[in-house]
Image (cartoon, rainbow, N blue to C red; front, side, top):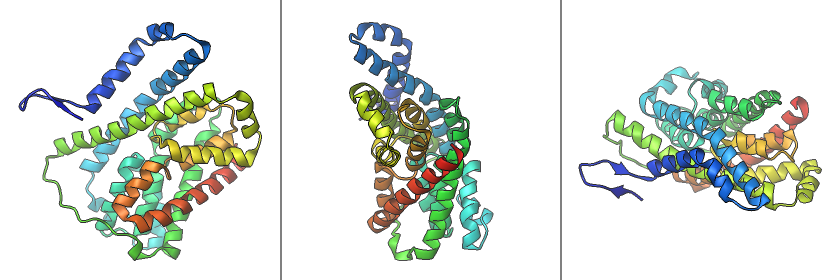
Length: 323
């Protein structure tokens, strides 16, 4: 919803409202904590605000970089840069996520554009999975969120890269062209400046909203769920891994901010939280919806469940070896 002051004036929309709300929350967190009564409510507020304060700078920087890539990097660049052989193009496209990162919200339409430009679908899908998970912003945020466990950065980057490459190769082996149906769309004639600002607004609203929900969910889990339940669940490796994998799908947190939510779930093992970090940027509710819109329902119905299974398996094995 937008409120228009006048036709010639500026518009105050959801982005400005969200930014103002976050700034006020940070500035007046001391007074707000004093107004909150009850130990549990104060704990909830502390966890909620802490997750937001730590995650927002990485989220904003990631959104800006993603918009720059989407608007200013020519789509034809990929067709020229990737190897011609599909089997080699898959790992090359996966590693390109380090050079040209983006959040998962932006990676889906970018992958669709790559396929339109003649890039083999397997390589485009590998980039779709790798870019939100192994880019420097996400890995830096992970290092900040887990200062006492630097091995989490290596484990997350390695597991995510392996999943992206495996899914690309699986598509080469088992995928069918008729599973992907890209919608017809007309190219937008807006200037690059307007396209950049539009991309920023879209990603901030999407990612910021899901971040707030994720922070609220993490705070609620820490406060309302009995500690004995969490300890019982965390003590069972298989159940804890599956629980955090499903939680990652449901929360749909932006990859630039999910590490701070995972760090707050301290009752669970590092391996379980690694699964949360690997699954989230690859399979969640908003991604499944976006993949359905960009690639078609038949694609999403096959790609999402297989990606979920591969991500859980690879992240679990990686956690057992590295963590």
